[in-house]
Image 1 (tube, helix red, strand yellow):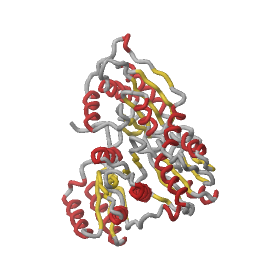
Image 2 (image 1 turned 90 degrees about the horizontal axis):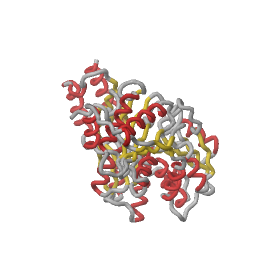
Image 3 (image 1 turned 90 degrees about the vertical axis):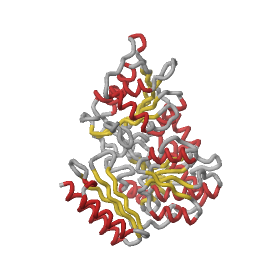
Image 4 (image 1 turned 45 degrees about the vertical axis):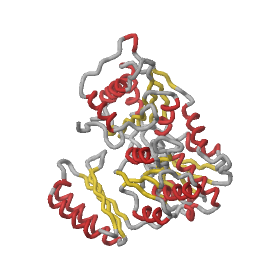
Length: 446
């Protein structure tokens, strides 16, 4: 069946507009709860959220839905997405829920679901939940309605788990680190973990007020981090997004380091140490061609998936890989987490920094990226990629780039946007190709 609610990363949209209404959130709780009522044990769901104002509304609606079908609910309050995944598994829950729209503005929100193993739900599970949403859902008998309670030490449990991923023989003493928490879910846990490991921590984006999440801060707005690193004379800067599953790094010169360079560093280090599994790493079609060439030169494979960390993780599990991620900063290190975790990935970078003794600018420049350009074309309806003129323009561009570059064109999974990306050895050619395709798409969508 066609997916009406779930996109590439759960359900997401503007709050109090379809599909992010309290009515639907309650029904999602009822449907997901019903789908995971398996066996005669007392069923449990754990719920975390980021710092959006609408989180209270969505959380209460979900609690109503889950308890209505007989599930007990454990509420964590503001906590990173990977913490929900970890605690769902460690607390033997049947389901985990994160209320977040990740890097989106505060007025959006979303619902991400995790299974009892701590992994994001499969397409098949989401399809079954969508089928339940389309009909009437049976409610629990009065005596079987679920209970709800809050757990106050969830953040402490997560900090302990994060620190356990850092090499036991290392400390962060002497490192001055700026961490930008995007006024989001990690505003307490990330600075605390770094401080407990010995770093001098300069924290920004740690004063959430419900409406300032990702607002001029965090991994999608790194200027604040760059400026703070330079003004503080810091050794390195770390930026997370609103739900802390994404990481962007800034070196001591204020230069941005994206997910491709971070993956290159971790994969190369782990390959040298003999701990890299699967023969390489998994990234998406958006990762730079320079990453692929760098890995090939070291005998490390690269497998690409469609965009979305869930697809990266699926391939990692199928192929036995333990490193994967996205250029945007989602880092999945399956030795330590079942989903993307920006803080854990940051600690791997910091461990490499301590061991090498090199400045971040030297350590984190693993390869020269080839020229790459991404543009978005918004459209109001229809399928512009099916238009004959668009197909012809794309075919011409692919022929021009053959052997020296790549072309990736895809519709967004979360908004009515066509993403046009090209990369190649010649910057002028890349720019020309992208502009021509965007113009064709805009004309077809008019």
